[in-house]
Length: 200
Picture 1 (tube, rainbow, N blue to C red):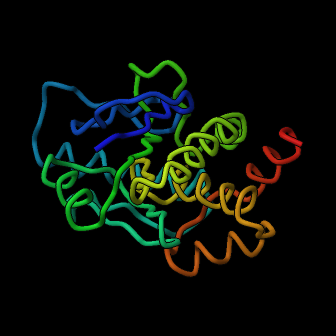
Picture 2: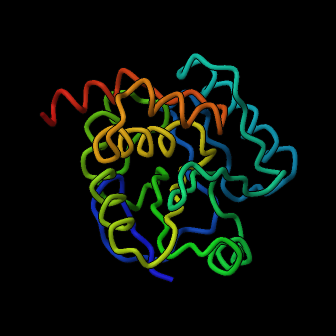
């Protein structure tokens, strides 16, 4: 399976990260000791992530890593979801859902052009490259495209909405309502509108 790394937001072929995603203090998330792998640290990290997500995105949605990967079909060739957590998740997407490309929008200290979680300015500046990567992958026609960030509630839905707005003959409100009616989430509509203004 091919995959599109967006490196928030520079297209290339890659294997999606299956390990843990670093959390940065500039997101309002306190970093934990990387050598401590206890369940309580993991639970605490998720609680902090959800608190930061609710505060920064101003929505009530939560991410539950312990429940595994979750996703939603948005169109017949576009799936939006949370991060794959193990190799079997990738196998499932490929074999059961006919996914040919994965667009990874996760924040990662090793990615050159990563976008900060919950940061509308970072999202706004990265949308054109991410949407371009998504459009390329869909236009290849080799299978479905899976778009994910960490929780599948902010960056990934925003990229999918911008794609539908820019390439699928939908106005922004229709694209937003189409996605959020299928996958309850709170992507930043102002960032999408701003990127559209910057782009046009």
